[in-house]
Length: 99
Length: 481
Image (cartoon, rainbow over all chains, first blue to last red; front, side, top):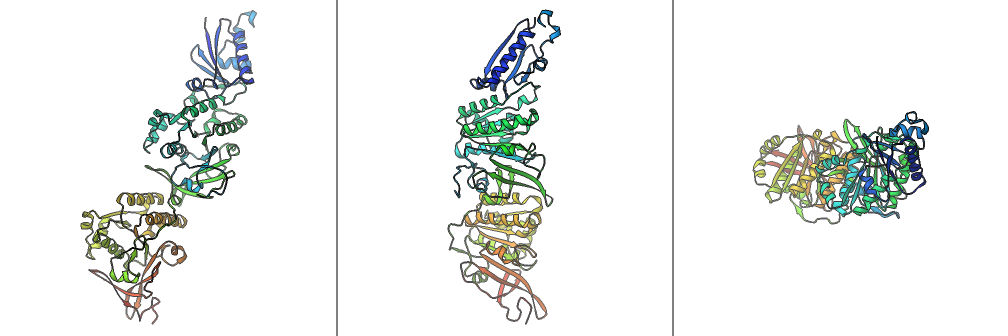
């Protein structure tokens, strides 16, 4: 089973940051029954990590695993496009009870 | 500098720029520097930080969107900017946003540049930076298609930089010269302070200019100012860089190399004097210059002889015909001859070359023969600026200077107001008709600060040099009897 690992970079505890996290977790819960990891990095508290990750815009989600890495910026409010951009399994690939 | 407004300034340390900016960039503000590709934007940004460190000991943060930090380090090394060492000393920090540009990235929903601001803020606090450079905004627009967001975020970035208390330079792309300030037309509305760097063809020559479009609430000089990018000195805003008021005037006199000419000028030239010798071809101008140089060498003074249009060999040969041995003078180490054609370089580069020779060789005397040759490569305004700037340097160093101007030259006293303010002594040669022959004549038109001979005097030239005879009673310069 493929384990998905994400790092979500945000800047401060803003509404936009929270929206992005909620959207990411919703997508993962609904599309990744095999499990996933999400790490939140607040660039305003850890600018060094944002530097290491070469993050410019926030929110940015980086899919760390599986490779290749993918990056999506924005609050992920369009779930369909966000799922495609992050390379999540399509809804019809899921077991019927999770569709 | 003048402090006619309340806005504090941060001197950039860039050669000549602070003079047109009347002290420097507005402190704790952001200034947009806009220009086409190759206009020198990145260099301006790099120099702003580098001069801050070397001249004012102010640390800086460089935010790079386009070139990688490695490229900037490498490209700056030739100017003597040891960025890697400054980084090691904690005086310079990069925020390198360039590497992420190539990566595939999609945008879904709303975003902002909060992470960038956090990174910049972090770097500023870590280094104690007083200056920030951002180069360049063009790529941020390419990467983020939503102009509305970008405009909003630019305002936020500018605001955040000001909140950090740093003085910043932000560069932006222009598609072409003289068509809007910036490519997207939004940047200039976000920034209170805007400058444009240009790189255009004028009179078949590349010409770089810098213009301050606005400094909100702060005075600055207007118009386009010529600058050059020198391999060793970086950006040099040419004429204005070297203007300075004359604080002292020398009362010491030096010989022109001709005893009679010395008498005509009231006892020789002042040591910090600027002399203009004009007249038609073959009348004796070059000989006057050479005699002036030879007199300097004879007095043990270092002499710089700058020859346009004649090679060193031609000059040495011609001088030999008047019994002046230039090769021996060179061998003594007191004479340096530099010859070159005006077309070989731009006016700004000629200026820097002369200035550099003046600084390195430290002459007591300088001859430029003929100055008017530069008219072929420069506009009247540019040439006047050139002479003003050069003269200011020479006066400060008390270098007795003799400029030669050929016929038709703008500096030939057809138009006295142009030269009146520039030179101390104006000597004119001309041909006159007397009886059945053409004779040479010499006159001193002006000799500032001393009485001078008002007569037009007869001149003969032979194998021993120039001889000034009596006044020409029978032949006035008009040829009337």
